[in-house]
Amino acid sequence: MKAVNNILNQGIATFFDPETEGGSQGACGPFADENSQIVAMNAAQYGPMNRKSPWCGKKLKIMYKDKYTVATVTDACPGCSEGSLDLTPAVWGQLERNYDKGIIPITWHVCEDDCYD
Image 1 (cartoon, rainbow, N blue to C red):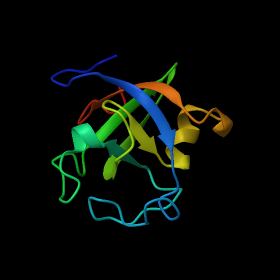
Image 2 (cartoon, rainbow, N blue to C red):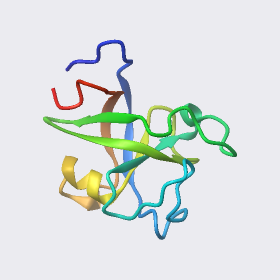
Image 3 (spheres, rainbow, N blue to C red):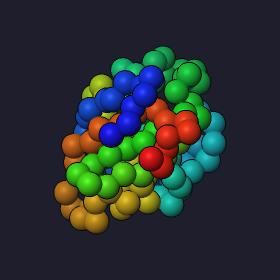
Image 4 (cartoon, rainbow, N blue to C red):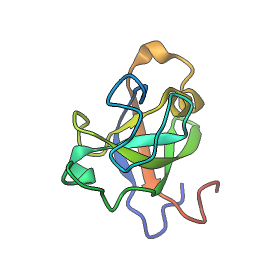
């Protein structure tokens, strides 16, 4: 696991459909749907919910067991605890095939050039 100059965060992943849960336009501005490669950042790390966060547009490498995926922060998750992320079904499916689980433990960090290492 390479997290050079980045903090390795730990938390819980859940999933949501942007079009039916919270609105298709995320807190950062872009529109999304269940197939979008995006995540919603937890409120503690996102910051004030009434404005665009410095997290907006950041790419995150998200790991679960022996799998990983990369997604972009475009939304906020008011109900997620610190370190946790709310994933679209597309992102969830790249980490876990069983949607009935509902939650999985994850680690993640901001990535730039090392997203696919």
